[in-house]
Amino acid sequence: MENRSIVSIADYSREKIQSLLDMAAEFEQKPNRKLLEGKVVATLFFEPSTRTRLSFETAANRLGARVIGFSDPKATSSSKGETLKDTIKMVSNYADVIVMRHYLEGAAQYASEVTDVPIINAGDGSNLHPSQTMLDLYSIRKTQGKLDDLNIYMVGDLKYGRTIHSLLMSMRKYNPTFTFIAPKELEMPEEYKLYCKEQGIRYHERQDFDEETLRDCDILYMTRVQRERFSDLMEYERVKDAYILRADMLSKCRPNMKILHPLPRVNEIQYDVDDSPHAYYFQQAQNGLYAREALICDVLGIGIEEIKKA
Ligand code: CP
Image 1 (cartoon, rainbow, N blue to C red):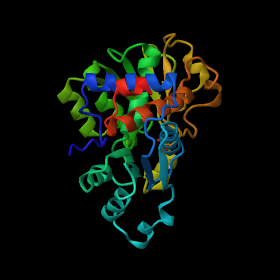
Image 2 (image 1 turned 30 degrees about the vertical axis):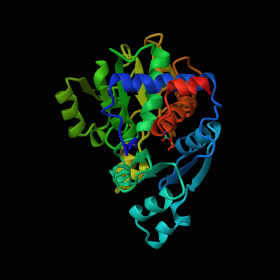
Image 3 (image 1 turned 90 degrees about the vertical axis):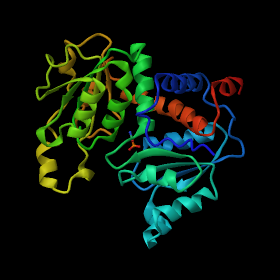
Image 4 (image 1 turned 180 degrees about the vertical axis):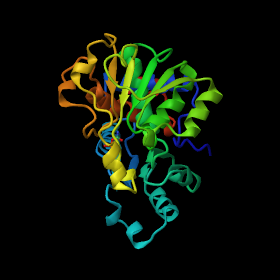
C-alpha cells in the first residue's frame, strides 16, 4: 500500500503544492465538512505546542473525526522506557492518521517506516515542520497573489529554525531571493546554503536590520531564538535579543510587505507592530486550520473534488 505520510514537502511539485493550497482555500470558505466520520486522528506531541496541536485537533474535529493523543509524554509509557517504534505500532492499532511532533530530527521519517498508518510530521527537532510550511505558503499566496519571484527575508534563529528550513526547501521551484539575517551563532547552516547553491536559489546574508534593510522585502519571516535548543544558556542570553522588529522600522517597506512568524514570539516583534497593516502572523496561524484540514484529507486520499461535494 502506498504510504501517504507527510514527513517533508521539500520534494513536492508545483502542482502538488497548488492542489493542497486549493484544498485549503476550499476549507477557508467552509471549514466544517464531515469527510472523516468514523475516522480517528491521533496527535502525539513529545514536545510542547499550542498552535500545531490545537489546529490539527480542530481540523480533525471540523472534518468529523475523533481525536486521541497526548500533549505530555511524561503521562505516557514512553516515560517508562517504551520505544518510539513500539508507541507508533500501538497507536497504529487505534488511529487512521498519526500527527506527531518529536524532539529528535528524523523521528517522523522513522515513524513512517514502522507503520502503514500515515504519519504527519508536526515538527522533528530542528529539522522540518512541513505543515507549518503549508500554512506559510498559503499565507504567502493569499497575501501576495503568487508564490513566484518574491524577496523573502528570514530573520532570527536560522540555525535551529525548522520552519525556516522547511520553507526554504519548499520554495525552490518559485524562483525566490532569500536574505538571511541572523547572529553569527545562529546563521543558516552550511547544508542549507549548499542546497540553495545546488538548486540555483539566490541568497544574501547580512547582519544589519533597520528600515533601509527592509526596503525591497515582500515577506519578512521573523523567528524566535529558541531557548530550548541551547545547551549553553549564556550563549542564548548573548543572542536572544539580536534582532527585534519595531513599528518605526516599517516606514520604508513595500506597501504589500507582510510579516510572518510561526509563533510563539518572545521578544523579537514588539507589540506596536501588531497594529501595522504589515503584520500578518495571527491570520497566518488561523490559516493553519485550513492547511491542516487539507493535509489530513490528503494523507487519507481525499482530493479536492470530494471536498467540494462535502
Ligand atoms: N508554529 C508552531 O509550531 O507553534 P506551536 O509550537 O505552538 O505548535
